[in-house]
Image 1 (cartoon, one colour):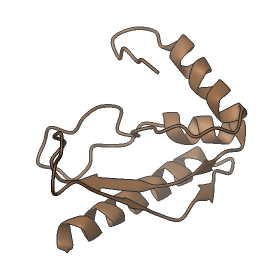
Image 2 (cartoon, one colour; image 1 turned 90 degrees about the horizontal axis):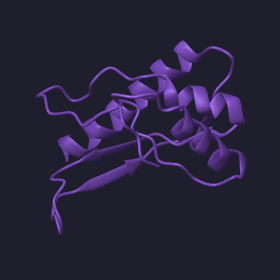
Image 3 (cartoon, one colour; image 1 turned 180 degrees about the vertical axis):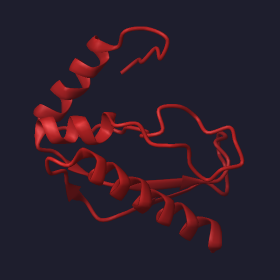
Length: 110
């Protein structure tokens, strides 16, 4: 689903929600952009937890480390335990961020 961060993305959001309502899987990067800093993570936006809440979908945290290059030998993806989002989106977003950071640190510490 194409997203142009500089413009209104209502159509993209609606398409993403439709995917989730159909019981399909949707990969969302909660930072909202690629991290080009030295920080392990950027602050998370609320799109992932908001859409999961609206569609009663599970969130599966994941952490990706390594080179984002074709045929990379060190790209690692680690998945965490799925969870449901209740009415407290701030709490859910913090939980997601904490889980993703933990998964990324596991990758980096090996």
